[in-house]
Image (cartoon, rainbow, N blue to C red; front, side):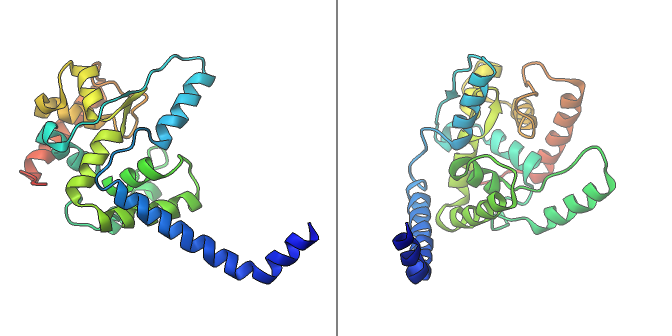
Length: 234
């Protein structure tokens, strides 16, 4: 044990450098791989599996990858309207949205507003274990910059719409479309796309097939934003 401690003391800086270089190399490697491959499972899917198991709930994972060309353009327009209006122009982090969220949260004691972009949500879903810590947030920013560097906006949207949680055991828009509307994702209407987008902040409690009064009101807001955004080319 003493020999190990002496070795670490003597070579600690070199070990730390090697670990940092290894981390950067591995993370860049996987970022490049996922620019053309898709994950079979995400860390969130694994976490939810064990959560449901602990709660003694039988919950099969519903996850079916489809290319972006087989997803209705209404769907990516709806999530940009609902989650990230400046998705096409920012480099992963929306400083304006962060400032607005901070100002809103200072005034609101009940409802809190987040400012995570679609790129950030994609990065944390694909690469990171779900947790609410500053360290995890730091890694989220790092992986967001990585995917904005090595992926196109089209690829980020394709990954996002395929892995994002959209209900208990439901991941990706293809699985959500078939579960809630009994149709493939490329056939989604504007209204249906907007309703699915509403689930994203709280997918375990919101059901597009049985929407609440709030969900109908929010749908109208998203549809209005979709019209203002106009056609989005990816």
